Length: 241
Image (cartoon, rainbow, N blue to C red; front, top):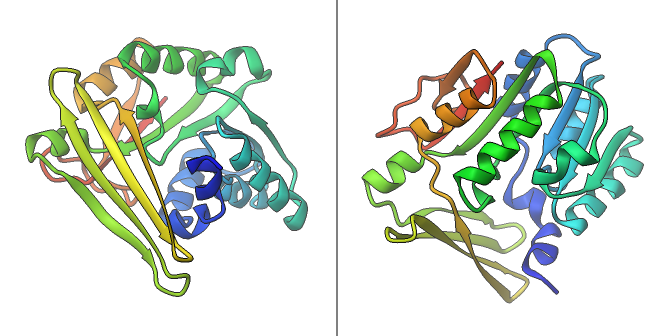
């Protein structure tokens, strides 16, 4: 069984839905009905919350088991969500229609291999947007990671389940790649994984979003709307139109 297939069982415990994220997305969207694209949706917690509030949601993830888990939830909760398993680089050929909002949060965009792929994703996403549509991205603040040589993120724990999720970083300067090492421990078992991440910096991200055709860009240090500080913010949230 693959790591992401295993982690999908506990995804909602490791990455619970944040109220501040939902508030932020709804503020960007405005009054429903509006059309929403959730890229790298995981098991679809945010898609379900937005659908329950009256938005028309399409959810996409690369991992088939994540999409399967969302499908189970959709049936259980009686929601209507269009979901598909697809690479975020293929969205333009997989989707039809236009969206009022596309969002990709949870540090997902940096799973792409390089800045060229990131620019390709942003360009194709812009073509899927309504003229006044919004883009919301959220990544770890890699400026801070590199400037302060951060080696790890806080361990995620669910003591009721006996679950822990360890996250460690190793930066290869020559390759300009961060190797993200994770270890899931639960039910007396451990599952380890390592994936390369592209350390997308603030200036690079803003330039890429601008090149994709977005005109207005705002940066935040969290989903509560606090200002972004490249030296101290733990995350970078971007809202572009």
